[in-house]
Amino acid sequence: METKFENEEIERIKAELSATVQSKRQSIFMLFVGAVLGSIPWVGGFLNAGVSFKSGQNQTKTNQLYEQWFSEHEKKIKDLFLTISDILKRLDEFPDEINARLESEEYLNIVRKSFRIWDNSDTQEKKDIIKRLISNAGAYTLIDDDLIRLFLNWINYYHEVHFAVIKAIYQDEGITRYKMWKQLNGREVREDSMEADVFKLLIRDLSTGGVIRQHRAKDYDGNYIKKTPAKKNPYASNTMKSAFDDSERYELTELGKQFVHYTMTDLVPRVGGSEDANI
Image 1: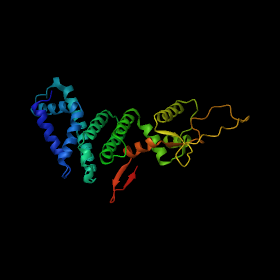
Image 2 (image 1 turned 180 degrees about the vertical axis):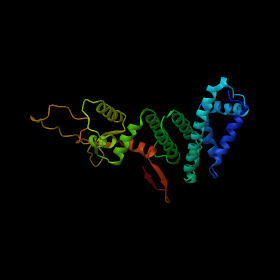
Image 3 (image 1 turned 135 degrees about the vertical axis):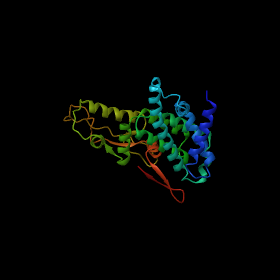
Image 4 (image 1 turned 90 degrees about the vertical axis):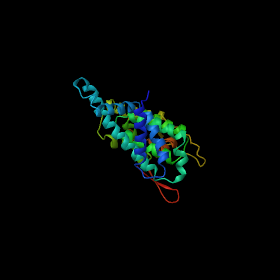
């Protein structure tokens, strides 16, 4: 249950964070900050701990573990506030047309879910991906919010090395497994090695997840063309296809392209409504 101090402190922090951006959107940004602070369970406890420390109630040897907890979360709260401030500055670059989106409950629910995942992320790279998603989902509505939530599930499930594969395919559409491996690791390894197993797992995860696929030929209407069955070659190798095959080409699915658009690019608004995407 929130204390009177907690409510007062949260209101103060909401006002201070929204004021980090000198904008007429401050009332909207206060809703954003409130959604973030309400989504992370330890924030309230940290604020109460701060009062205890200021009053000197927890400076005894018997509270060393509590002091360590406070010190660790002090670093986390600074990181959280910096992230919020960066997102607000980014959102403030976009025109007033996004105001209704920013204060909608649908978007605030995405913010809450995003920051719960952000709080549990172990690396800065994953946190940066979430930060881009929140910013881009506030500024653009190219896809339904259900798909934004799917992207959040992907972020929560996949690891940084999965994202490295996605980025490699995005930057070189039609890349083969061999070229991917050269970018990710580059060492020559056996087909029965642990490294080969891990690499196959990454490709399998992203393929079954609907993020990437082997290149498919299409007709003018977007229908996929069946491959012509290969003639049986009596001189074909009796070994299985390599984990590092250099013939089959890979590409992002359309859903995968949108995932990159929302999570791995910084969209720069331009006059006339178009944008640049940098990765």
